[in-house]
Length: 275
Length: 354
Image 1 (cartoon, each protein chain N blue to C red):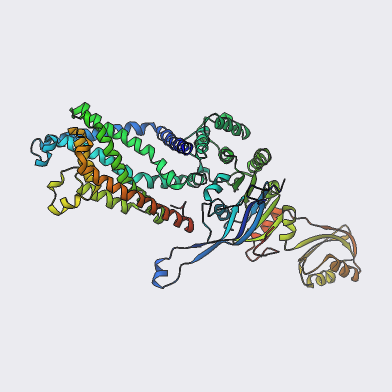
Image 2 (image 1 turned 120 degrees about the vertical axis):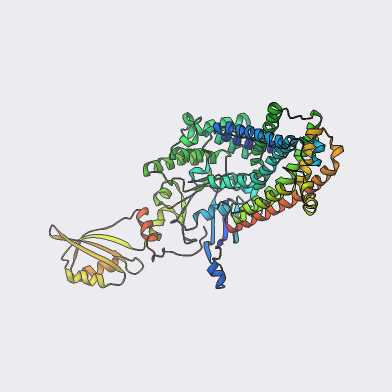
């Protein structure tokens, strides 16, 4: 058992190293990405400055600071995008580069390959998250509560566990139908529109505000803001953490089941390596 | 080269395929749906049965689209068969795919099956990790393979900067990383010039087959490659096996005609016409030289024998000075059989088993 776990860990690290080395071989892309984030942070700051104190009453919980509200929402949204894209992108990339068959011929299973291939994108997204928050702190004095960092990590983990299954389902759809952007667009669009990423959900019409309660991202952004801006502990955030846990518990096994069905089907159709 | 060691599952076969069939169903077009036509189907493989012994170097020869790659993909668990079964060293490809994958490795002609942004060594390290290999042992193995395939000096160079031949060598080295019991070489020389292809196969023979003593299945559409490397071959034509046996007898089995070169005296147009009129004679060409006639006679061996021809010549007072069989290379035979749309290979049993 221990040996199997160690072997899996070693394989996971090999994927991480492979993707890091490939990413690092495009050196300017790193710098351009970081610079892009800094530009966005500056823009968000001045958008926040336009509103000043005249923001929605629900921002009182965050000290009427729209800049802080927005930057945490956008930085967390990055993780959602990564979760939705990374699994299908890893399959699509290895189909297009021609490495999929050779990797699949090793004892590694397709679901493991897909999960291991997502490690670097998550690490990279974490770096982007830190760049967002770091640029906010350094350039505009964004106040982050040190007490909430541990809670933020819990929220982040639950967010990934909620959205990764949707990404895995998206990968299954793409593997089967070769196109699956519509699936990501629906999930992404609904979440951004209704989950309170860029504005509080109570500015939405009543019915939309009710719908937002059933979206995992609503709970993620609320809990993340409460953790990082107000230093709340997990015990104080159970109203958001419990729904997130339930979403993850239902979606994860469901997504793995759908993925397995999809793999079996494309093996029958012989379209595994087609794109 | 063959041996018949028993594997730990009690079988002496590296591969056993029984009535393996793969049928692809095409997507229906809008017109098909409107007219209620069923989806078209392609039989990539039809009832293929064969057994390959452990330690054997086996060739699968056939033109493009004959089902060679489909067969390898079924054996390597990448595809599922429509019907039939296959075992690798006694392990079923459908029921024990993971176990099967631990024993096989695939070398494809696909140059992009390597990570071009990584160096040769980094590529080998990554693929080694997929087999749970790590540490000092794998570094020693990588060194050995880089040395064997003469890539040591290029090991720290990105694969993007390799030539096609170097990439193929690296792909073969990668295939040998996990010490596979069964190595699939899927058209490994595609894209290489003839000299480079020959050298690569020599290298495979010397370094992969003889050094590691694996069972090897080579797919190719180039007959001389199976001559160079294989003990036994199967020819595939439209998804069916049309020949299964030693390489040496393939030419005889597939050859639809036999050509005799004769030097005769007393030959004339009447005799030539009589020969041409015989059932089974494909052509009879005559040229006069130094007071004798050179006759090139092509006929179907199942319709006419050499003694029939000699009897006819004797009956017409023709004196035979010399008679030789024109040998066809395997390549020429293969081309003659598979490049002719109407030609059906001889001995055309759809299924063959050793």
